[in-house]
Image (cartoon, rainbow, N blue to C red):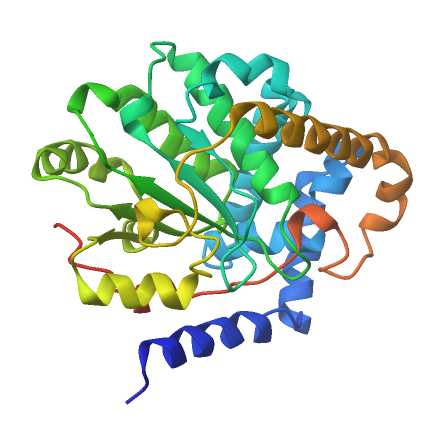
Length: 309
C-alpha cells in the first residue's frame, strides 16, 4: 500500500501527465474557439489553450457545453472586470485579516488562501464578494508555471454562526464554480465546530459534486489531519492555527504593500494583452502565465477527516 505521501506524489505526477495536449484535446480546443467567435485583446489572452482546456474538462469534454460556459465567463469578466480591481477598492474589507494570501505555496506549487471567519466584521455582501474575487485573481496571478490550482485553509478558531453569511457563501460558490473552473484544488475546514454543520448542509446543495469532494474537514487533535498538513505544507511556513510553526494572521500594512505590488504586476500583464494576444491563439498550453495547466492533486485521495453527508 502507498503511504499518504506517496499517494499525493502519485496524484501530482498524474496532473503533469495531462499537460501534454493530445490531438483530440487540441481538436476540441479549436472547436471551442470556433464557437466563441472573435475575441478582444484581453479575451484572447484569457482564452489560452490552457484556459479552454479547463472549461472542457469541467464539462466532461463536451464542446458545446464548454463553449457556453466560457461565453458566460467572458460576459461576466467584461461586466465585473475582476482584473481591474485594485487594493484601494477592497482595503476596508481586508482590514481585519479575515482573508489573505500568505507568502507561500503548498508543496505542489498551489497558491494558498487563508480565511478566518471569526474576524469578519463586514456586513456588505458586495464588498465581501469583491474582495473574494480580488483574492482569487491574485492567487492565480502568483501561480508558478504548470500549476493552475489554489488551496483554501479555513481557520474556525473562535467561530460563531454570525461570522458567516449564507448569501455570500452561495454567491462565492457560484463564482468559483462557474468562472474559475478546475482552479480549486482543495478546501480544508480546520476545527469546524458542530454548529457549522447545519450551515454546511444548507450550502451543500449549491455545490457541484467535484467541489464537495474537495472539501475536507481537519482537526488539530486528529493524527491523520496532522500527517496530511505535513505532506502538503512546509511546517515552518504554515500558520500555527493549522499545526505549523508560522505566525497566524497577517500584518495588514505589509500585506497592503505586497498586494499593491501584485496590482502593478497584474496591470502590466493585462496592458500587454494586445501584443500577447497576437500569439495566444497558437501558443503552447503552458505559455500564458495566468492559466498554466496542471491538475496537481486528485484531492479525493486526501482524507483529512470525515466529510459530512
